[in-house]
Image (cartoon, rainbow, N blue to C red):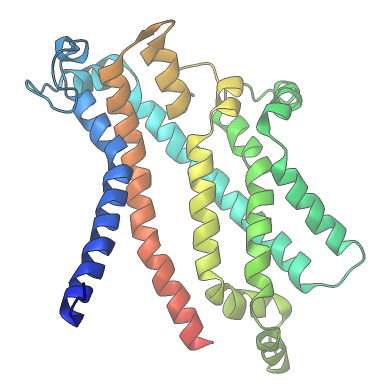
Length: 283
């Protein structure tokens, strides 16, 4: 059976859009499940005979409980503060380290670069015990600063490893032309290289922010008071009591905690593409 050109075009388009629709449904289903669970009354949550994919009597009681009975806003503020500070520090240190390893020629540069990559691969479950000893000796236990100085231990290697590839992809001729015109190495880095590095900086910052936002082990080990806990630890501490799960409020907290990250990704994804295209045209 032969198809006309128009029929083949329609068939290809249908297959593509069906595949995209399936992908969208799979990606958005967890958010849909969190939404319907967060607005279901407790009676519907435990009724197995009703359709679990629909809400018959929506209620805001789980959100009310979350904001009135738990310090959710405090957890959210702590997570935001720790993530911003940790990401900023890690980006600053990672940019300098990546530039030195990618641009400067010195003995042991290759070994140091590989060591940084290996450090990034070390799981946090092996590091939180010695770091806990250090934090206690410094008197920073149960303080947000403890997280701000421990998160860079796994964020800096990641940012450095990621940014090294971006630095190596920028021609050295740009810096040489800047130095010929009288610019110092620092000025060439700030005014010439970093604008071209914008896509890499956005990617590294976005992933670092997400990693610090979702981090659990360090936050669980180094914080104890409700006024210091971050969002992941606070949710588990007060909404999961032994074998009792406050599913409605738990899903409400998970939804409110994940939506800002999703919005951030959506915003910076467009910014990332624009920055990469602009850098390619300008180069």
